[in-house]
Image (cartoon, rainbow, N blue to C red; front, side, top):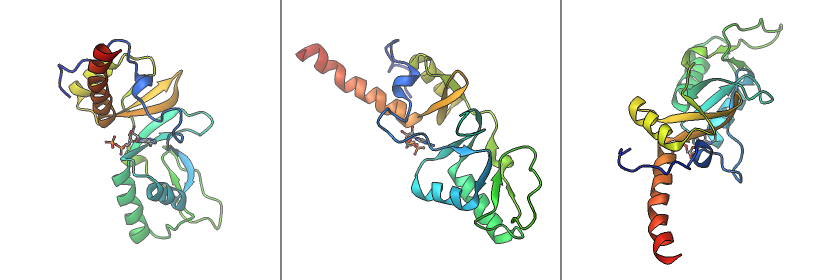
Length: 177
Ligand code: ADP
């Protein structure tokens, strides 16, 4: 991200974040209760580099961020090595794992692979500030919230695409409109 390519001050995090209005909702993982199979399906059906972890779909309260590759490795390892982890095992990102009811397969505890403090900005943060943070902290992605609820995600590529769009659009609007 080159410092010279500045954003107009009017561009806000909400203008760059995904999902756009017409997109399917953000793919998130809930901190307790998803099964190994559900997470494997999520991984198979999407190609995102990572997933926000939330308290619940209802609250959309952010707990952390987990990378796709870490999920894949951990689930593979658990299936191979961990006694009894199967498709119906439940995955926990919580600090404490509640005792599983009798006849339930052993749970899979994955809090250890979660980034507990992913970088977040609010939807009203000016994009020039977001770009500055990306540069200074070397971020790959940043989460966007509104009143504590998770709204979206901005990746470094999203920013670069948005910059390219602005660069392409501006000369036209000046010369031809
Ligand atoms: P990149 O932007 O480098 O290709 P990703 O593959 O993670 O990185 O993301 C692809 C697109 O999907 C980006 O526009 C990003 O904002 C969006 N995205 C990333 N993670 C998620 C997610 N968990 N749910 C929905 N959209 C996502």
